Length: 141
Image (cartoon, rainbow, N blue to C red):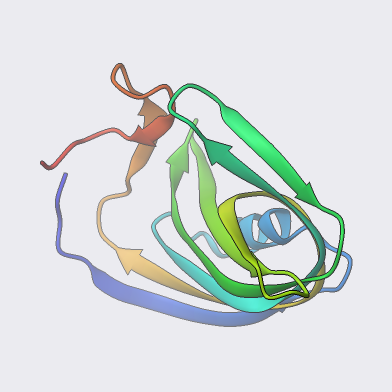
């Protein structure tokens, strides 16, 4: 499905220290009823677990030290009838090495985010025969 969308509401916020970033942002968009949109953010985390999908399964790497959030990006759609945030993150550690992947879990030090709501038909994540992941159900190309 390809559709031209209009931007609806735009929210700017901050996740409280000690919270899990993905859980807090997901809770926020559900409370606001944002079923289609985009998430971005910057900040710092006390620890983070990243996921990397190799085509068959996820591998996880836990970074148990403070990291700088170089970029947080994601989309909002529906999965199993619920509003779902799919978030990826790039983080830098103290030697300026950068790691990135699917945001699995974290502990926030400070995280500022922007949510852009899109107006249009919601995108739905479902299992796909070609890819063993829940992806948007309709293909465009």
